[in-house]
Length: 160
Image 1 (cartoon, rainbow, N blue to C red):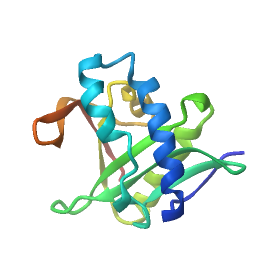
Image 2: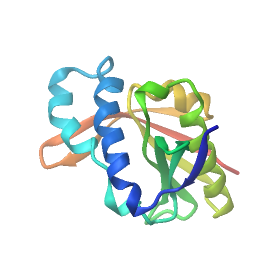
Image 3: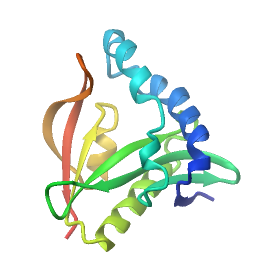
């Protein structure tokens, strides 16, 4: 049985390992090697600021972390939230892990007064987010660091 709980700082190493092993396999079919060679070292690491923020979660089965993800409030626009750093273990796809994390995140965001959620989806995850009610708003580039950006798809969902 999959259980979703708030991520703790002690989960960071496990999420880091999950990202490092799964993102390369999951993104390979939708991105050229020239993009992955520069982006993967930057996106395949857990983001320390998300741990302990109260809106980032892990999905577990027994003692194994099978997925992670969450949301944060927009700093400028009231009522807007952003889906953050979602991943499912490539060995646990199609088992409801991503759906459990995202459903939990959206429910928590709604309860916190968020009325609209934005997601910067990988090309790989567009169909997943669409199935969860997000609308495709088109391609975008996510800046990762000076001179390096990552092609993504901006998606949005009304929560009210």
